[in-house]
Each structure stands twice: as C-alpha cells, then as structure tokens.
Length: 353
Image 1 (tube, rainbow, N blue to C red):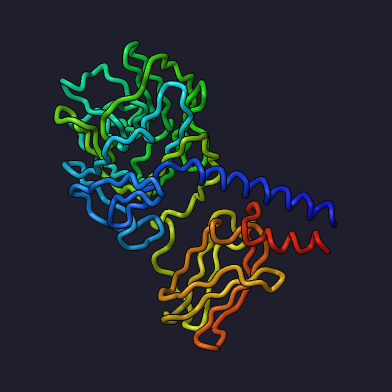
Image 2: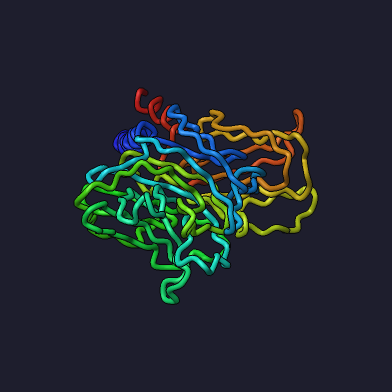
C-alpha cells in the first residue's frame, strides 16, 4: 500500500512541478473576458477593435470575442517578450471556433501573427510565428497552419492540423517551437511536426495581431470566436490544457422530473455535467474527497453545471447540492485523470502515517 501511495505521490509531485514551471514561463495570457488585458504581471495589454464579446467555450457570457471576418481584430503593441528569435523556444495556446464561411478574398485567414505585410515593412521581414486558416486550397481548406519566416534567407517552415476546423466547434490549438523543430497540436493530439529551417533572425518590431494580419494590403481577417490566448517562453506540455467540452456538444434540453439529477459522463476523463430537473436558485454545490475533506464549492444559479479536470483531478468524490441547510441531492463522482493539488494533501497525510 505504501508503495502505491509513494507512486501516486510521485505522479502528483512531477505534475505539480511541471504546472509551476509552466506558470513561471507564461509570458502573456489573454482571457478575452470583455477586453484584451494581459492577466500576467507583464501587463502586455492589447486593444479590441470591433470584435464583440460573446459566450466562451463553457457558455459563460462575455468570456470570448467574435470576429466578423471584415474588420474586427485585437492589436497588441510590440514587446520584446513576445519577439522570439531563431533559437528561442516558445509555445502559443489558443481556443477558437472558426466559422465555416471565412472571407474568400483571402488565401488564409489570420488567427495570430506578429507581422505587418506592406511596403516599407518589407515582405522579406522575418516573423517569429503565425497561425492561419487555409481558405483557397481545396485539399487543405480549413487546415490551420503554424509557421515562421526568417528575414534574409526566405525560409518558412510550417506545420498544419491535417484536418479542417471549419466545423463551428471549439478547438484547442498549441503551436510549439523546440530547439530544432516546430509542432502543432489539435485538441491535445500531435498533428504534424517539421524541422525549423530558419537560419537568420525571425525577430521584428511589428505589433502582435489577433484576428488579422498587419498592414492594409492583405489584412486576412478571421471569422469566428477566439476564447483564450496564451504565450509561453518554453515548450508547453500538451497534456496540461484541459480539453473541455464545446458547449455545442452538450444537449441543450434534457427532460427530467423536477426532483431528479443527472450526472454524465460518470466516471469522466475531461469533464462531467450535473443537470437538475428544475432551477435551485442560489444553491450550493459542495464536493468532498474520500477523506471527507472539502475540495470545492460553487454557488449555483443554473440547472446545468460543467466540471472539468482542472477542478476535479483523479479520484473518488462525493457531492451535495444544498438549498440552505437542506440537502437536495447527493451522489458520487469518479474522475480518472492524474492527481492534482487538492489530492496532494491527502496523499501526504497517508504517507506520514
């Protein structure tokens, strides 16, 4: 038993160490909750132009932005922290829902880029990264390409998702630059990789754009929803991003008796949904682990609650829905992912014993 607990503790410790390292190498994080403010201490803030606040991937209001594909974008002034050179490691994470009808006048719709495409800036100017949706090539229509470009030699290594994202569903993209290669992940899965053949500088003094390319010649506006964007000065672990359920995949209407609750899926790997037959306003959802320790509580004003692995790590839990002092519902939840912070304490207590 002690051997098992030590193994579990080691798993949790390694995972925790990685999370802390990832937090330390986060350069900028844009939650896009009604603004383009950077939530890190670096405060590399942007300005929103035209994009409209909409529901995010969890269904939270004003948690993402819709870009109309005509003239909406976010402008972030040049900052050296976001300006990666030929040998730098970095990662870019973005949640998006691409509209199937991208603007047909553009060969590719720009999701994220640090580049101005116009005379004066110079078409031979390097750029450290760009994420674009292919529009014209029939075989690759809807693929997302991640690429870089060096200034003097004209090298532009690129990778792509190998499948279309024009399905009007939320997806997670992770573009990674390793010492000698680039990779792109879609919803946690490696889709393609390539040698990074850039040999000269990829730095520039251009702003960072979300939803378009810089310059007036070929702005390449993106149409769809962008939820959250994050930049890292390290190689991020693809498994550290919870692949949460697109809101569109959760049934909008499920019929229950007023005094029933449904939990699905259960056990769960990435998310679970608790749905009641009627609304219990300002009720409290309380969750405890097998030791009776409270690991989470939420004020509830909806009939449908979505819990992700970032809130409940691997283990067995018990929940209660409380209306005042009255227990309305209770039940068991089983999460089958790796252990998280809330479980570290209980493991440490057992080991000490």
